[in-house]
Length: 214
Image (cartoon, rainbow, N blue to C red):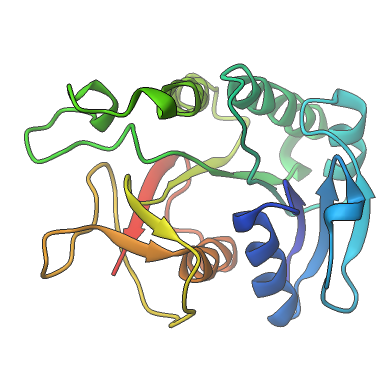
């Protein structure tokens, strides 16, 4: 079993990752800036108030972790690369014993059928651009890291990603969405959490991005 620290644990994705990991017997620390938002946590989950961009907090939590899971979000585009920098510094400080980083990324950097990033398509919604560019910068930051930091960047589908059913079923891809018979890429938050916890238990995408769909 792994020792996992989940930043953004009060969010739609983070809360489901916490629940999925705890249900499988992993040792989970749920981190949120406002711990009053951490409701109905599974038994045994440790709660910590903290910010993913606070170097002292991240370094302290990294010491006893096998994986740092970043499921944070917000319209401030600087949040995402700042989170990468803080987590990477904490891991690097611990050397070979440091945890790996698993980052909940964005879908806008995935490539459409024409090989163009969804973010660069002319119809990309303006209101999502701050989130998208922040996540793109985070992916660029990971790719620029040296080999002393082990990371995985996990993109959901670019459009159809919402709370739903946990089926335990999914397929993985790399830089293009995983589409179903209807030509659409879809996944529930619940099955995204399943895939993320699977990746921690059985690493298959070290030092790279992957995505998931039905």
